[in-house]
Image (cartoon, rainbow, N blue to C red):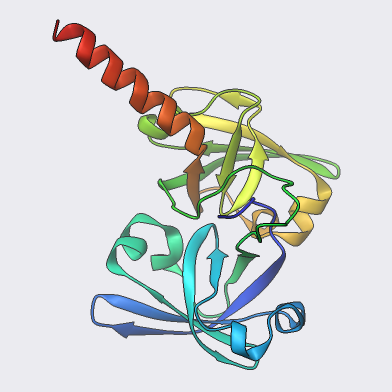
Length: 208
């Protein structure tokens, strides 16, 4: 489980096809090496742009991940290019401080940057998303965009808006996004359960 508080940016150094999967090699910052002894790096879960992947090899600052067919088709990782920056977050330790919201690292789908309204240091971002994802969002609720925990300012049937502070713009990939770019979306897991329970209840009621 993650919190949506991005720790650092990594850089994609190589991409290689492995059947219908892809090996992604990311250069991680020195802080990742300091916090993960060599014997604890393999098998570690890392959220890359909000998508939970497993470290399958670690050679110094170069960490390798395998992205399967589902990941490549349902997230923006399938469109990564060498040199791209990616958001990185370690899985939350059991005794860690919870500062964002519950993020599983299970991307629900992709959206697109529809508009960026810069306001000196801050910026309002509007994202277009499928109606099924927008239905799971509420104003003042939470959403993960490329793995970044954000508060929803406005929600429509096909879009949502957030306000990004200078820190978020500076230390995550969102500050580099442009109109038209694809972004990974994970809605609040609590909203998913509520929606499922309501649907089951409605179905049971109609069957009476």
